[in-house]
Image (cartoon, rainbow, N blue to C red):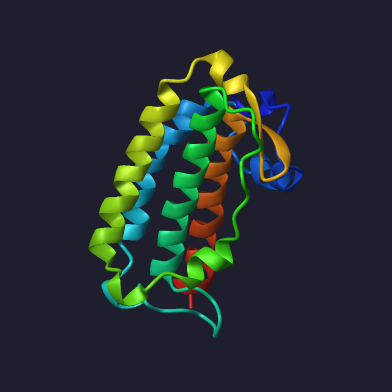
Length: 171
């Protein structure tokens, strides 16, 4: 399934979806993500705790946030595919981030977790057929297709990777 085939998704993802390759199927976009790990690996260890402005997250907190968000999107996708009819809860990324103890984070452990999560996400979505990807559940108050959850994972990581490159690494 391609992003142009989506019908149901939260409206706040419209602009992010426009930045995705329109003609590449979801599973291939998920597969390409492994190469982005090299960008994170190239960030010096000394930069991981850096925040470009007071109150902004460090790179390590951003990466933990990406892992958390991806887990939530995978849970939502699996729930809908397995027939969950109840609305799935929303979550507040800032509240989640506030509980992260950055003293326990390390570049090495975060990258291992991130890579494993990417592999799990790819594996999970590769098991979904076209009918599964078109299933609709209510997540965070919006009717959303399972495929949209996959595209949201990609768009979300792409957004934060761009922020890291622009505000953390090009200063």
